[in-house]
Image 1 (cartoon, rainbow, N blue to C red):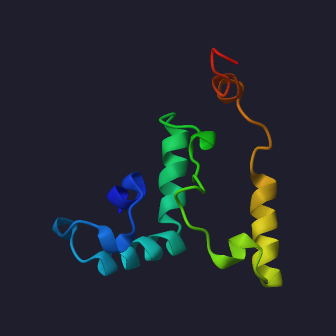
Image 2: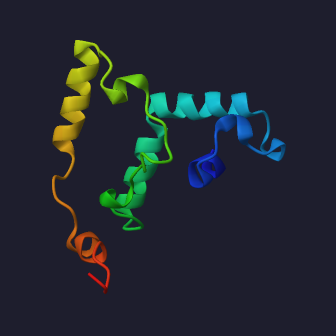
Length: 105
C-alpha cells in the first residue's frame, strides 16, 4: 500500500512481490473506511513527526473520480465534502509561499 501511495503507480502495476494487487487494494479500502489512515496520520501529527499541511495530492498525477470533475453528486456526499472542507486550514504556510518564487523572479 505504501509503495503505491509513494510511487503513484496504478494498483494493477504493483510488483508481484507485494502480493496480488486486488487483495492489497481491498485492504487499503477497508482501512480507509474504518478510519485507520486518519488515526495513523493524526498519531504522526500528535507525535510531532509531521504537520497537517504536508499532506497533499497532486491532481496532475492522480485521477479524480467523475464527481471531482463536477459530475452530479448526492446531497449527503456534497454536505460531507463541504463540512470536511470547512475544517481545513484556509491559508498557505509562509515557507510554502516563499519557496514558490525562484531567485530569477
